[in-house]
Length: 496
Image 1: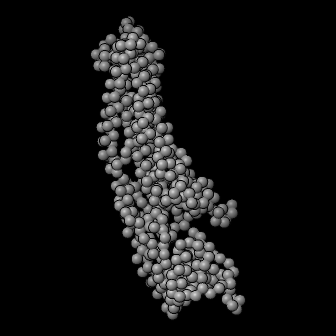
Image 2: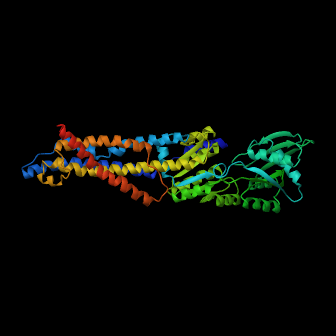
Image 3: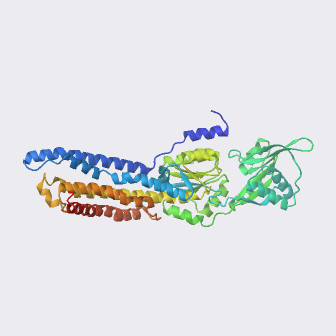
C-alpha cells in the first residue's frame, strides 16, 4: 500500500468494522429463544395429548389445526411484524430533521449510544475563530509579527486566515507584493500552513503559522528554538480558552496570534441532560491540552482529546468500543473517514467530502454538527418504542397462552374447564378468536410503532417501571378482553 495521506485513510476505513448494538443482539436472542420455546411446547402437546387419551381411555386428541393455530398465536409475531414499521418510522423522523439514514438499524443504534465524540469547532463552539491580538516575541515589533502572519495567511481561505489578514490591516500593515514560490496548505498531520516566498535578492523564505508544538518541531529541525517568553504567552492564551498560533519566519519564531472562539449558549445544559441519560461526552480538538481543558471545563464535557490526529480518533473509538461502549461522532473531512467508518453512529456533513459521506451511516443535509444530540434523542425514543412493543408482545403471548390452552384441551382433560375463566364458546371459537385477535392487534399497534413513544430523560429504573405498568400490564389484560369480545361475536353470528 502507498504511504500518502489518502492511502492511509483508505486503509483505515477498510479496516474499520461496526459492531452490533447490545439491544439488537438481546432482541434477536429473545425472539429466537421465545420462538424455540413455544415451538417445543406446541410440538410436545400432541404426543402428550395422545398419551393422556390412551391412558385415561376418554377424551379426544387435540387436532393438528389447533396446535398450528396455537403456535401462530404464541410465537412473537407481534413484535416481529412491527420491527420494520419501527425502523421505517425512525428513518422518517430523521428525514423530517433533514438527516438521511442509510438504514433503520443506524437510527436504532443511536438509541444505544452511551458515548458522544464531538468536534470542538462548530459543535461546542461557534466555529468562527477570529484573530484578536498579536503577542510578539522579545525584540520583535508587533508590526513585524503582524506582517509575517498576514503574508503566511495569503493563501489561507479559512475564516481564521482571513481574520488574521484583517487584524493586520487594522494595524496599518502594508500589503507589499510577494514573489511566491509555493503555498503550504494546512493538514491534520502538519497542523500548520504558510507560504514559501523569494526575497528581492533571490533568497528563499519560509513563512509559517500553526500550532505551537508543530511550529516548534519545524524550527528545531532547522536549528532554531522557541523563546521561553513565547511559550509562556502561549500557555496564558490557552488558559483563557483561546487558541494560540505561532508564527515563524524561517527558523525564527516571531510571536503568537491569539484566536478567540465562543462556546455556544446552552450547550452546557444539553451536556447535563446527556449525562442524566447516561451518555458520556468527549470533545475532540486539534488545540493544545491547556486550551482544550479550558474549553472542556466551560462547556461541561466529561473528557477531551487534545492535539488529535485521524489515527488518534480511530484509536480512541476502538478503545471505548473494547470497553463495551457504543460510540457516535460527526465528521466532514477525508481525515474523519476512518473514525466515521469505525463509529457505531456516524453522521457525515453534507458539505463534507465524499469519503466522509460514504464512511458514515447518516448524512446531515443541514451540515449542523450539533444535530448529533437530536439524533441520539430520536434514537432513544425509537429504542423506547421498540422496548414498549416488545414488553407488550411478550405479555400478550403469555396471556394468550393461558387464555387458549384450557379451551383447546378441555376435550382431552375435562377438569381444565375450571381454568376456562373466559368461558369461551367452544375450542374452535377459542382458536379462531385468538388467530383473529393476533392479526388485529398488529394493525392496532402500527400507529404506535409509527408515532413512537415519547422519550423522557429519566433513569433506566423509572423507565422500566413505567413500561411494565403500561405495556406489560396492558399486554396481559388486552388479550383476555379482545379474545372474549371476538368469541362472543363469532358465537352470535354462528361462525364458530
